[in-house]
Length: 335
Image (tube, rainbow, N blue to C red):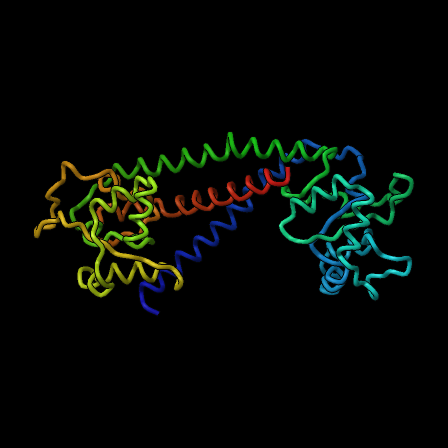
């Protein structure tokens, strides 16, 4: 494994660790808000509980000592099961029958779950619910922690829907602005560094899009693509680009996954002394480069030290952005 491979592997491991930590922190923030709410005893989650797992799946998972599956077997019976049903045998329930029986019990909530779920689901009811009262007095994981996810599809009368709404407000009005503010601070910090004239970004500008794709994006109104195609010319081949700066081309290529494409371009306004002949009229994409601390920069770049200094913080913010957007979309879908 060469130096570039080691660097690539190190950065990916680092990002993965930062992502998991950011996800954990994010969930902890949202779960803290849950403590402000309590069950309204509507019993909807007792009458209708949904899962992407069939009774047969749940039984198999329980044998692998999955706690949730073991609790399901202890408390919940699938709709459509006859009086002889057991999870251990005859546990195949047709999903059509299962959904039909659940719809007969609560059409509105069951329909909502079916519509909002991205894949087929099975419905269950609590075996301890008698005359709208729970006959089970001991604590249990499934009930005490319900809903165990902020993205659970809840019935309209469930008090925890207010928790979901509060979380969307927190993401939009606190978390997202905070992430944006910190990212702006990092970008502004780049002003403490300056271009040292290595001209790598002029000789070897790179994009995931081909020249034809960029031209199409420019025609569709993409401002970056407009500026880029007004300046840069594509290399005919990768080898032609590699002749300019082989180490940088290899660095870019090895940073990407095998199925990702990369195209290299060069600026025709660069002089033989590596100076810009249209410096005062250069477009915004040149003036603002690099506009992302996670950009792939060669060690010769004057902003490389900035990139290295803020890398961990930038990776964390990148992860946080992905995470909060993911959860915000999911929560808004289930509400």
